[in-house]
Amino acid sequence: MGHFEIIIGILNIQTVLLGTSIGLLTYYIYGKLRYKSPPGPWSIPLIGDYKIYSNRQMHREVAALSEKYGPVVQISMGPIKAIILNNLEVVIEAMVKKKADFAGRPTFKSGNLFTEGGKDIALAPYNATWKFQKKVAGKALRYYMQGTHLETMISDVCDCVFDRMSKEKEPFVVTDYVDKLVIHMLFNMCFGRKCDLDSKDVNKLLQIDQDIIEKFGSGFIEDIVPGMTYVYKTKRWKDLERLIEEVTTFLRKELKEHKETFNSSNIRDFTDSLILAREEAENEEREENVAMLSDTYLVQILSDIFFAGLDTTRMTLDWFLSYMVAYPEYQQKCQEEIDDVIGKEESPSASDRPNLCFTEACIMEAMRMGAVAAFGVPHATICDTTVGGYDIPKGTMVLINHWALHNDPTFWKNVDKFDPYRYLTKEGKMDMKPENWLPFSAGRRVCLGEPVARTELLLIASSFLKNFRFKVPPGVTHSIKHRAPAAGTELPELYKVVVEKRNN
Ligand code: HEM
Image 1 (cartoon, helix red, strand yellow):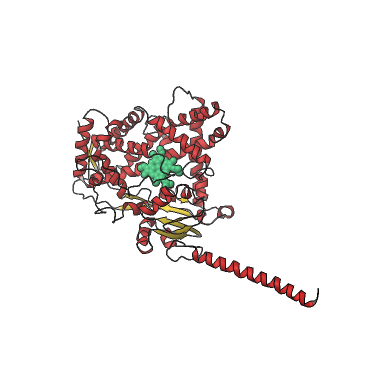
Image 2 (spheres, helix red, strand yellow):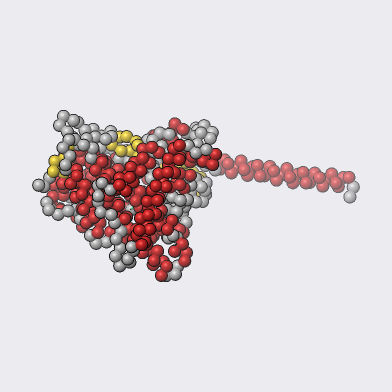
């Protein structure tokens, strides 16, 4: 080969390399231009939109931003990008129409600590273990709701708490009694313990739960700075580790005691139902199912049922009672309905539900106006996908802004008004559920406890109003003010009430 051919050969190689590079660059630039990221405010690199995500009422701020950017808004939480869905159309597209695409969960250091590495249901990744556990827990809950078990237990717990509450001589904060009632109900449901207002275990768990919300409600720097705990542990982080260890130790002890006294023909509570599910899997010789119901997984399912139900239920009842005090005419209308349907002697039962429409409508409206979980539980995409015409890469954190759905003025007439009639037909019966009313979310990750929560809420709310008339002390005016004890959680400002016993 002469010099000429060699030069031509080199030129050819150079031409091919150059051509390939230009091709790849064009493909990359074209891809970038074609790739449509959701819009959002400018953010400081690595720090992100600190002003937005450090605001405990971020749901309100993002809903306002969506007026400028549209229903899909992107913000940066430190180095983590979050996509927030702010209207029904995009929520249904992501959670219902695209089914599994948005059914993952992001992984957080604090979440892993709470759940022994995602071994629960609520924070678990979208996989076969999650699916199986949700099925088992759903079956155990349904088992528990059969017959009159739930209503008898709620009636016993209400008697126990109301007995103490009726002894109050001075104006008092009713929230304290709501908290006690709900935690005792869950103790009974999960561990079969009768109501004992002086129980050390119950009071300690309630204190831990309140501490976790009040002290850690603004989130953890450790979730935003990966690897930080390997270098340095803050005092807050160490406190969290200690509280979680206390809770897990308690749950492990309960499971151990239940296993020692378990009798499959006498299922006492939710813990027994889970042990029964494991026995069934063992009898069917389904090794893979038995492994998914090891003690660690059972403890985590118990923790989910207990804590997912505790805060959401007690906070919803706080909102309900606060609105009942603010609107005495609605309180009275609920009481008339309750007296008519239940009678003066009986306790509310699940079969009364179809006839307690006005009371149920007041609960639904309290859930709309009071945001107990404004962003629900964060989702993550499990593949590259799209929503609202924007590209969303695999592994992106996605939040549903429930507050925005519940306060969308284009959907709700007089959006700021407490109006139970929104949910009722002209005849006073329950109407179709308004599409924008989604406190339990939708799609694959929909709240597991919705049926039990709605029944519990109605039974407890009716029991409160059946037994007591709630008022503010003479000379005091009650206007509802919102406070945000934790990110994405709003509660009414604490206020004092006086109660009059009814039906004596
Ligand atoms: C007022 C009461 C309640 C409200 C407002 C509520 C709301 C929610 C919401 C918004 C989610 C997140 C759904 C999503 O990821 O899109 C959720 C998940 C969940 N809730 Fe509830 N909840 C309530 C009561 C309960 C109760 C009583 C239980 C248990 C008996 C429960 C168990 C769960 C579980 C296990 C999940 C995780 C589901 C999953 O990841 O697949 N919830 N809830």
